[in-house]
Length: 273
Ligand code: 2HA
Ligand code: ZN
Image 1: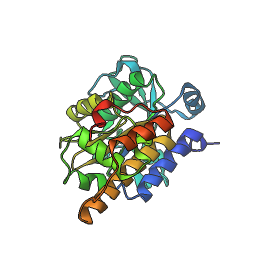
Image 2: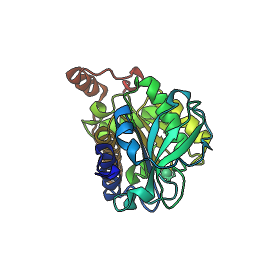
Image 3: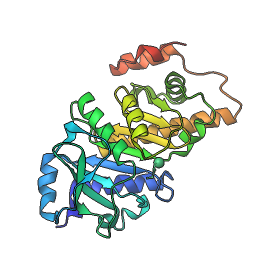
Image 4: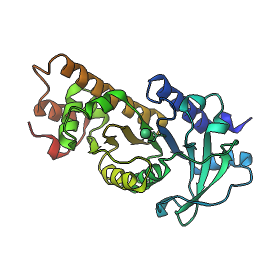
């Protein structure tokens, strides 16, 4: 038995590899973090080695104090995660005060968690409260159709949600809360972390203009599926634009009918033609 055989590790590796196969992770693009359950921490603990020194996160995530995260290493290529997980990802423990972390496993050739660790942790923190601890996965990917779309559609939550919902009938079912959109911002810092986590109070998806997509979910399957659905809808939107624009499209009543069928509540602000 090795730590690499534990189901959460297998799920993480599979998701990273699936994202690479989708073409979302050129070079060191994108990153993935997962908050371990208490049982998973106990299963992994025998493989922990001498912890690295405590390091400032740069933000404070009080409600995540004592949690453990499986995280991509900064500068690491997601395509290498499958081949050498121990050198490309790490498990980081958050201090009880929520302002520091230390590596307890992985990155055996050195390194630190993803440059987007502050963003990931702030979003885990917001989602921990917003979803009563159910959300465990935060995923950032360089999704080409979404990035292309940030060049053509006004960077507005309502315009984007309507455009994506209208692209494909499944969309309002998969992300009934809609999507939030951020203007271009410097990546990797506390500012983009704060702005994204503001959006994540109401959305499970945030679009970063000219950069990519940020998604939060309960499991590897649902979070990957969410990213996939948003990117596919953006791709359909861009194909329609390339074909000269929509001649007909779904309307508000269609969304209301879908919501009724699936027992969903769609925010009012997205229900205006
Ligand atoms: O991990 O994607 O946003 C590299 C990035 C930074
Ligand atoms: Zn990125």
